[in-house]
Length: 211
Image 1 (cartoon, rainbow, N blue to C red):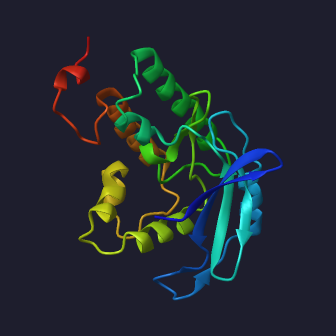
Image 2: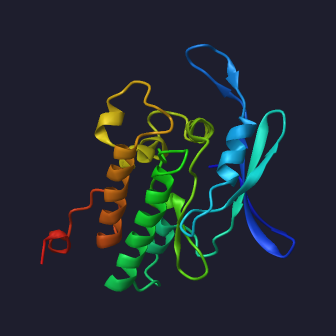
C-alpha cells in the first residue's frame, strides 16, 4: 500500500499519496519519468464527480501526488461498514454520481480510467461520490505491483477482480485500460452497491432479480 497523509494547506485539507517515481520498462529496461505536460492535463480536469488533482511533488526516486481530500473514505469502506444505512435512493445516487464522473473522463483527453474499483471511488463530506486514481496509470500500476509483490498474494490477485476478461487475456494490456474495460469495472461496482458484498457475490440472488 502506498503511504498516504492528510495535510492542511491554506485552510484546505488535501490528500497526499507517496508513489515510486521511476518506472522500468520490461521490454527496454529503460526508466520513464512523469511527463510534466501530462501532469498539467490532470490539473486541468474539473468535474463535480472527479477528485481534484493539484499536482505532484517530484524527488529522484519518489513522488507525492496531491489530490482533493474526501473525508468519508472510499465507497468500499462505506459498503463494508454496517453503521451506514444505505436506502435505495442513496444507492442510486452513488451509481449516478459514478456515471457522470466516468462520462466526463471518457470525453476528456485521458479517454479512460484503467483501474476503476470501489476502493478508488471516494465520498466527500456531502456524501457525493468522486472518482480517484485516474491518469498516471503506468505509475500507479507499477507501485501496486511493487506493494503486492508475489503472485501467491491475495492482495495481488484481488486487484484483478474489477478487470475485464478481455484485458486479463492480454500479456501486456494497455496501462490506461479501455473504455469498454471501464464499463465492465463499473458493472462490478454496481453489483457491490446492490449486494453490499464483494465482487461476484451471489449469496442473495433475490437482490439481483428484476422486479
